[in-house]
Image (cartoon, rainbow, N blue to C red; front, side, top):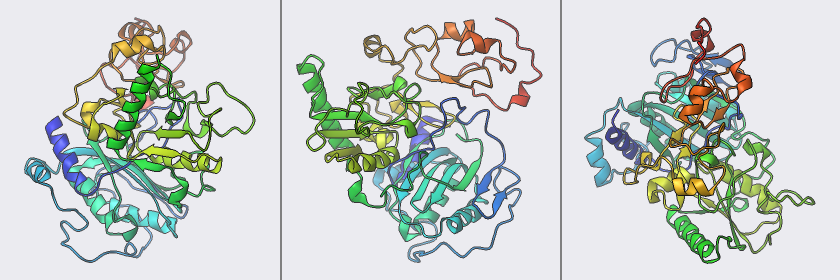
Length: 454
């Protein structure tokens, strides 16, 4: 699929809605959409567990409990366009060029009271069984969190159906090109926490407890002002304002981040502890010694949900001036381009890394900001030799039992045969080095191969 077709598909879907995205945070040693994936969609709620027989739409019907129609449906509007906003002139032009078979990736979340989440899961399962959708859709008492891929027609159909429910009628979405078919190996619809880390006790349904969302244009003004202040003071950040990156170290910050944002020192979101310690002073914590009532804390993540969750934690700790980037980095790149952003954006699907141009075709294609890389010992560095990498894209360790996501230069890929260390090179379950942007598949495809030393 061409990028023109991808952007046209994305523009058409944006007429259904536009907004934040998030995906379930995997463990660091994980293959995003690779080895652990399967071909069978799994639909889960506590009672019953439903497994369909095929990933293809229209095949292998799952046995489903009888469910009532989705609650609080609106009846107005035509069936073809019910729930859709009016098309803008640009989107109308795109509509004439878009094929319903173009694949897109859609992300959205919404904190809202869901009284019967298990029943809600069953309703979504019943609708999706006839659609070619792969991804992760989580529902619980606090709302919904979804990331999925599919042909434009099916992706749009699910959004239209969802927005017929008053609870989700104005839900906002993020769209990006799927590049080559599905970005996820299968479909999972589950009753489970929207974010890992134990958040059921947080007042997420109270918007006053969450940070104030800043539109991308306002965020741009803030970060540009901070950059000017930093340059004028020979590199020192304004102590009255802090940019907080709530993503993960290693595989997110290291390929892209906002200038002036400190690198996180955690491998997963649930380990983040910025500003939460009552007694210990941690030198790696940018909030450890700040005025909690006067300091502006600007938080960002990929799509917004982690910032909403974490801001409620900080609010309970006494932080007053909390702000988030509305829609996350993906929404910012789409609207403002890579202003004060350096590098690519890590995404938790088979694509792994997207340049700003994937969200905004007017953005200049980027591989690596060499000047920034040479100044920073972590950004865009090979995991093995420390040299600056030209391509900001991770690979999985060839050792199946390690599977570490890491950046690697071409020389080290060859010398270490796709592994992250010499120890992994001698492991019993070694997969071949994959060329280009290929991702590892199931182990049985490699099990009987004899991997030759380079």
